[in-house]
Image (cartoon, rainbow, N blue to C red):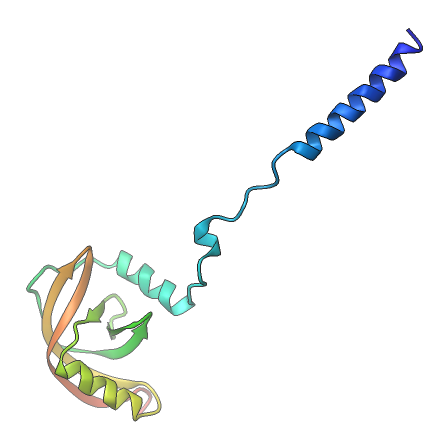
Amino acid sequence: MKKVLPSLLSIFCVALSCVVALSPPERAASAEENAAPVTDRMKSAQLQQEKMKRLREGAEIVDATGTFEWIGDRLSFVQDDGDTVLKLLENRMMERVVQAQESSTGELVWVVSGTVTEYRGGNFLLMKHVVLTGKRGD
């Protein structure tokens, strides 16, 4: 028995070493974790979009004050109340806003009117009227 016990102990240690060596590595990173990093502004906008109550198709925005920000690859209107973020539908009004934004330094404040649309759980704004009121902090 005294000779068998060390042999069994040796076999047990070798078997345990093989099990540890052959066990799968820790969980690999998911595809979402390997994806391109999301900026804080994009993540914040997504959270705001999820938190806000979605506006209904055809709702009118009248003289809403706010700013325009690039969120991802889309220009969005961020209302001063902080609860409403609307992605813009491309039209001539948007082109004029982009030109003004590109030629200015600082954050521009706008008064916007338009019609809200819905698509795949998100709201979009078709601007009908937009007026530049000044720069933030002036």
